Image (spheres, rainbow, N blue to C red):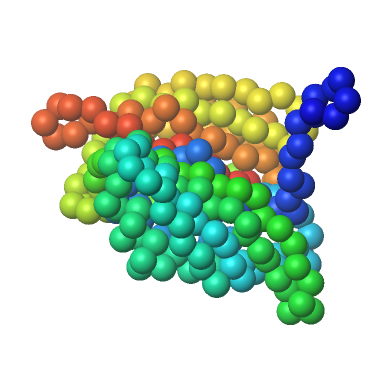
Length: 229
């Protein structure tokens, strides 16, 4: 409060951050944590080649369980260390981790600040769409050639069938458009929309993804972001 007016104070950050395919607000499982390696700049937010030369040199990690005191860990590299992974996996479903004070540096010694990140721990086996497990950058032609959106468990390597999902086109300019998929196959109509409406620099978000297990039960996993080359 200054005088008779109230102000919201926000810290300005130079880059958005990610850990693998995870960004702030995403849910992660124990299997996801095992696969985590490094924190990095979120590529879509790094517009110049010089931006990509900045690497994480340190960050703070605040572990916030649903019950009990919070724990704090300081990292002096970009790596998600075994200590952080161990602390993360012992939490209860719904516990959170906050990555803060993320410092980036380039070869010239110049420093910039990364945005805060928060991840939410959820119990589960860790399931991903197979086609997008290790890749997030696609050309239009590559996307059109995809046929199925089967899911795979990283812990058991079981294949599950995606039953439905929401598909969002997020252009660099213009309005976002939404489509609904009702099977694991990418329909000809959706492929036609991808071909005519998307261009390099645009994004696709696959959200509300429901998959079916062999026993008939259903599961849900984190959104998938795809970048168009």
